[in-house]
Length: 188
Image (cartoon, rainbow, N blue to C red; front, side, top):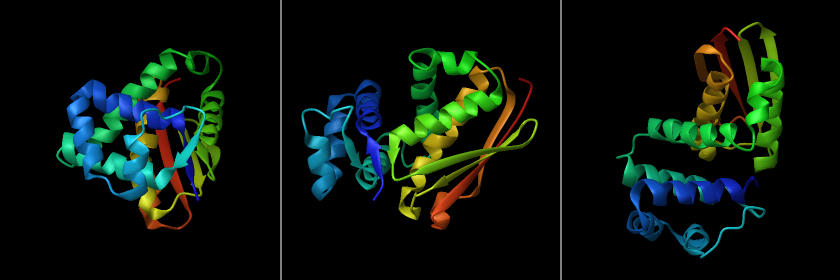
């Protein structure tokens, strides 16, 4: 079972409330079922606790249906906003210090602290190119891939990289037990 850190869950909840209001958040929660609904009806989600990734993905899917008319690309844009805030805040040193390798290694370590049951490996086969492999996600976690794209894309841009591209060469929804993200950029 893959879990996600409460920090990410709390950020998603606050994002919906800030973007669309408390009433829309309540509408989204009302469309959820069972344990997922119970999780998001809680008064408090603790940043230090672990929550089922399945429930988080269900919430993301319902959020996209209600607030973005099902446009999954909105998740990339929303993730970039969250990531930019984090990279200008508590993680700002990761963007400013060192090489692209350092930045990508730091991001992979951050992701390993956000996901329980997932491993991350970064390879840099040539300048301006990286392959990031995540092991542990199931096909049903595919929406997380959009958040991951937003995270890497914005981090590389903030570090000075230009023409950043991020695409899955092995998508999460292939359900192979791993996925691979290809990153390309110029500069930096």
